[in-house]
Length: 497
Image 1 (cartoon, rainbow, N blue to C red):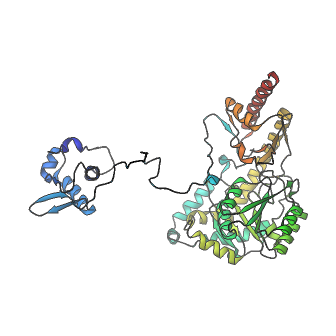
Image 2: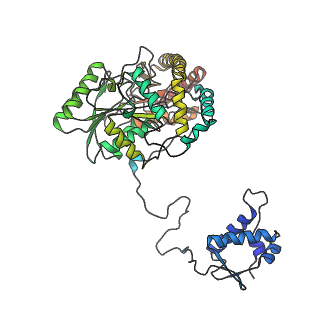
Image 3: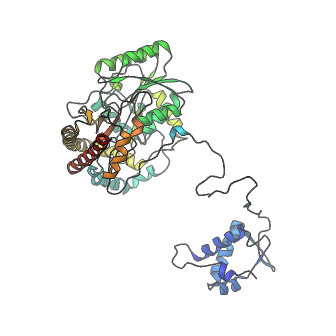
């Protein structure tokens, strides 16, 4: 006699109905062969008495098992385990190693070292260096929530709850077209814009269409690491050119073009990532002329156009593009908050069409209601008001951070005050290494992050980005204090060696 009373237990506090608890436990007993094929099950009245539940609960459990095909009911004979269910193979084959199924797949798959890197683990009490992100505490959540709620309450919104276009919400495309034409000097229509889930998605889609295995793509000697990985993953051969105080050296780009075919050039023209320098007007025009002469694409990543402190933002390359060479990528993620995955990709209509086709197999569509919310957020002038507010705050933080860094740690670090953006490119004195800083800083509850992502082999610039926008004035003072303690400890250790 099978001890059903001890094998089947009921959790009265569970949200799962009792009949499903019973059915699922029977399935487990069948799979592990505790109940072999063709085993006769007790009648509903008998089993109900054994496990102290109502008979109707057992009938419901048996009905569920019959519907799923685990058991069969034969009139006038009884209920039996389905004899056609094969045994689940659980034996360990010779030469194999037993692994936890939650940790290891039971099949082989491609693991690419190129895209593997550790994500930061934020520890309680630590101050963390970031790449330059907005302060989440300044996010206009009330304004956004009010618009979202207003949209959700209206009946006509229901049409946005089904599958839509892969190009993105039309109202947002229309609003962004007007907004970008007015603020960035673009000359586009709704046909030239596609809504993405942030600029990274736009970069992925664009590189997927642009690059074939072995194509040459020019990037800076210092460059946004995620962009490098995206292009290499698409099959590009990265050709690096120098970056100075005027941005990418376009004379070096021309030399490369004369020697070998170039498929594309990646540029963060407004604030080069990671060094924050701005591409000069002379080089902008030179680069556009080179793109036309050598028939290559310019992938312009304008990730923080809105944040410029010393003067008005310089118009992007896309605003001067007369030949359809520029693919312009941006987002509101940096401006408002990273959690709002709203970005855009702007290019010629034929290229946008292909991106929309490709997007169907990556991400069927974006968040229609969120996109509609941001269309109203921009149209109402809320975005402009938010930008004006945070610009003042971030400028104060930039000035304080740079002043303290110079006054308290000028012997250890060199830097230029950035004209815009949300981070400072900080070069460490060659007498020290970021590896040393990384080890000692943790003792002082300071985490400098993955400093190695900036260290391109063979270049050795010994610098990292330190974000200032996401830390308030008190936190900046504390950050500098902890960094100062770190550098003093390293200096004392070196002096005693």
